[in-house]
Length: 152
Image 1 (tube, rainbow, N blue to C red):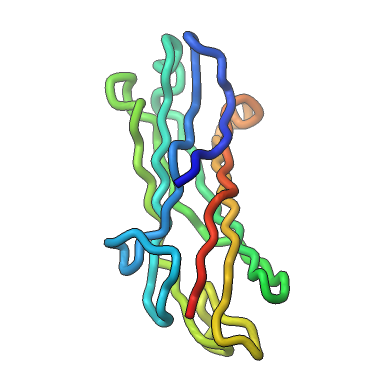
Image 2 (cartoon, rainbow, N blue to C red; image 1 turned 90 degrees about the vertical axis):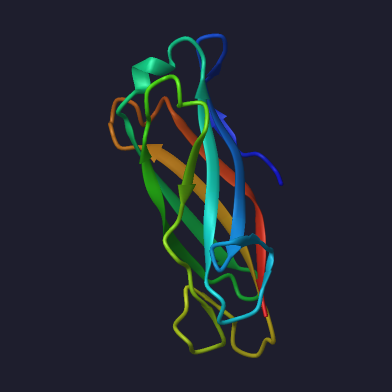
């Protein structure tokens, strides 16, 4: 499990972390190989550290998952959920779970659909998080580019 990249990184004042992005088959167990048509969710673990993290309390962040099908380069953007930064005492660990993501065979119309002519599909997932507040957006953001899922 790899961590993402986030900013700012100015400890001891403020640090935004994207600790992990994992795929949960049926929303329960971690998996990277999914038997279609099993649904999945993507779970992010993020957090804020530092003496100034209280300044972000109440800020709203949105998550997007950009998928790329390796076989033919087809791309989609899927909603990843959102979160509001809680008070400093609990801002060090926030879990964000995406809505259910469907998987399926060619022509199924699924979110992660196997490409025509292939028995399986491999999907690279690039996740990004950004603030809704235009003043916060250029300062506090994160991405994760380490998740690959195979749909069989």
